[in-house]
Length: 377
Image 1 (spheres, one colour):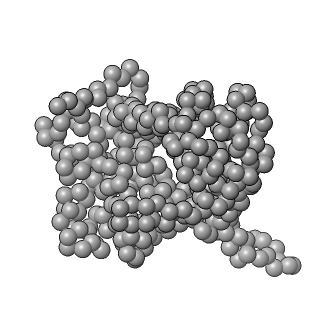
Image 2 (cartoon, rainbow, N blue to C red):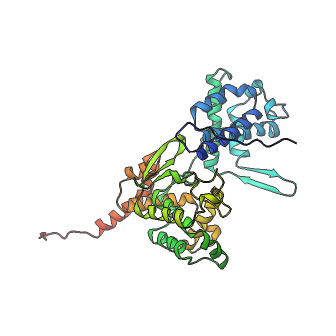
């Protein structure tokens, strides 16, 4: 009987151990997929390691593996029975139309069989666009690396993405945020069963919701927070963003007090925790780091109360990110300040949330019609 090996982090970076450990899980999963793929892609794997973030690398590899399975199971382009048996010669047979059929026909709707169930899988255009991007990067690299004789990506069909509309952005209004925070503070709107858990987690849940709605944190950024992420004397805290960016965030008094109250009055003491958990900020009732799934569930619960809908129709943490963006702009902060706070790659993303502010300006101007012939005092 083999003994399960324990992974220990020997960390010389400034990142906390839990962030390094999480990244290591992503890297290990990427390596597992690479081992399943054809060996002639090895230089492409090296390229990905240096060109994109760990999470993007994993997303590319998952899309490419899915395409390889399609080649084996649904086409005559290869005689391989396993995806790692696909050859360079097989790839040289692939035309742009084959990729277009994969994206436009197969990926739009396909089926996954289990022992007792057939699952219908559908991809919307945003998912198809990501798959197209993954395949484009791979085929372009193989052409540049002289593995393939021609670049077939010029023949890939465009995938039309709907232009985001400000009115379609799902977010909480300011009054709904107040209802949500009232619910987490008093237990109003919760069922009797939910109130049993609320009595044990209300300070934790309040701190989580306030961090989301104040800073527009991404789910992963909040889930990874530690006790030592916070410097309460200097009123700041550290978060770890996409592409390994470390960012110091200012800590306002309202959020600071909520986090301190949770730590002092509800979070288990270190003596009750395993060494690997002692630094984790948000803990479950089982004294483990709160999972992303659990955070999603509690956010859905409290937002559903604010929206007056069922728990399943509550909002995700990302909708609270949209809530933070819109609220900050509504309070008069510039889109560039909000872009910086939320880490938007492009200011046009932030401008979507500013459309509501434009409507406010229009209302002011429409109601301020100067009459001709009258002088101002």
